[in-house]
Each structure stands twice: as C-alpha cells, then as structure tokens.
Image (cartoon, one colour):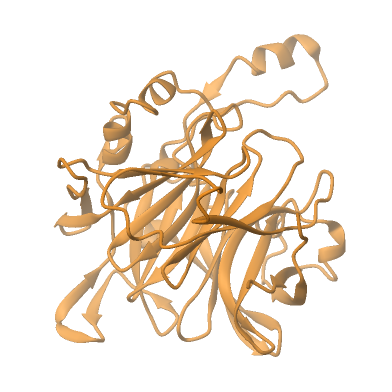
Length: 358
C-alpha cells in the first residue's frame, strides 16, 4: 500500500504535562475560530488549543464535560474516542465499551484472576453535544444564525444498560449477542472509536466487532425530547432507530471518521491490542444510502488512500480532522495515542502530523 505523504507537523503546547493527556490523545476537531479541540481517553473533559504561531497551538484551556452535561458519575473515565464540530455544536462520544483488566506481570496467580474480570465504566456511555461560541463551551445560548432558536447542551438519554443506543443495539441481529455478553473492547467487543457529523446525521465507527472482516459504521439521528436529553429518531426504511453500514477495511476496525465533502474518510486499525496496519480509506458518496448497506473495494466506492507509518509499540493513530496546510486546504491532521517520545520536544508539548489527503 502507498505510504502517506507527511506535509508538516503541528506542535501542541499544553498547560498540563500529565501522561493521561499527552500520552492518550484520541480525538481532534477544528472550529471556525481556528481552535483545535482534543480529547484524551483517560480524562473527564476536553481541551482547547488556539493558534499562537504558525504551526503552534497553545493557550490551553480544559473544559470539564460535567459542567455542561450530566455524567453518570464524577470518577469513571469517559474514554473519549470522538470529537466533531457541526453547526455550532461540539459532539463527543465515549467508547460505549466494557474493558478487561490487564495482567501486570508481577504475580501469575493474580494476573490470571485479573484477566477474568470485566468492568463497565458508566461514563463511557456518553454521546453528547455542547454549544461552542467563539471558542467557549456553553450550556445554552442563542443560535448565531437564528436568534429565535436556542442551542442547548444535551446527551443521549441514559438507561440501566447505558443509554438508548445500547438498548436498541442489544436487540440487533449482528451486535446484540456481543453486547449482551459484555464482550470487552480489544476482545472484538463493542467499541466506538469514530465519530463524525453531517448536518443532522451522526456516524459512529466501530473498532469492534469486526464480522468476518467487515467493519461497521452506525448512522443515527438524535432529537431533543426535553431540555438536556436526546432520543433516537426513526430513520431506517421500516422505522429503525439506526442504519448499519458494513465496509471492507481489509479486516481492520474503524479508528476514526471525518467527512470530505460527501465522502467519508475512514481510518482503519487493528481491533485487538496489537501492532498492525493503520490505513486511510475513502468511502465515496457515503450519504446516499437510505437503509443498511454493504460496501466492498471491488465496486470502486471504497478505496485505499494510504497507510500511516507503523512503529512497534507506539504512535497509534486515533484522531483525524481536515486541516489546511501549505497549499492544501484539506489535508489530514492526525493525533496519536501512546506517542513516540520523539514527539515530545519539551514537557507539556507534543507533535501531531499533517498528511496530504488527496
């Protein structure tokens, strides 16, 4: 596969040198004021960075998400895996996954026991939107495009299983049995790692499960049923609450999504916790499907663009955003989980990459 062409690197300068931040960046988006917003899968908030010099973003500000939407609790990580800007809202998703405890390598008996333990952090079941005005998150405000309309912070309605999406997917013919047995992420269990929005249509990319080599992208629409609460809108051909799109990513799961016009850019990566291909695909005319769909590469609708460089044990690409760079208005900004130490020139600083997209 062709390797991506690195156009430039962008320096992120934070106020916090916590490894939970610099070492676990998992999502990124850009807003019209030029701010970059990034998320870590270990924290309970998101970070804003503003351009301070060419190719340098700083003036770091942390926004606790609990100040704007109601979380399940104040302790469990959200496992933020997607951030997207659309029409004055920032959309944020958690992974919606369960997790298996890790072996620590110190005591064999305890490690065997730990590998039997599966945990569900409630805050991972977050799918939320928050108004953003001039680089600031707010709970409620007037729509700058229509002062008679209110923009409100809200999240998908919580339930005993997590939220309304999990309730619906529990009955799904492909995903229901996997969710019902609480199969963890990294074990080919349910794991949302991609988020993008086109007008009122929300697309969620699943790192897992991958079914006989087919990755899954969920499409849904949300409506506000009461202040602060979102519900699923019927959008399928027969009143379903979501659509399922199956895509051939060479056996990889979805790591991130972003729109390029009406085409969908898909970052694929291994479902399991292992080193492997990080591959960028282009799904053409992704918005044209009125119901569930399946798209292989032979049709020409789905094409491989390039591979990202692979480094063993480090530099796992997790976040994508369209980004203007040099003479290319739509380059691809990539942020990394478990970044190589060479990306950290000084404490509180880390480099992201910009690749030529097309």
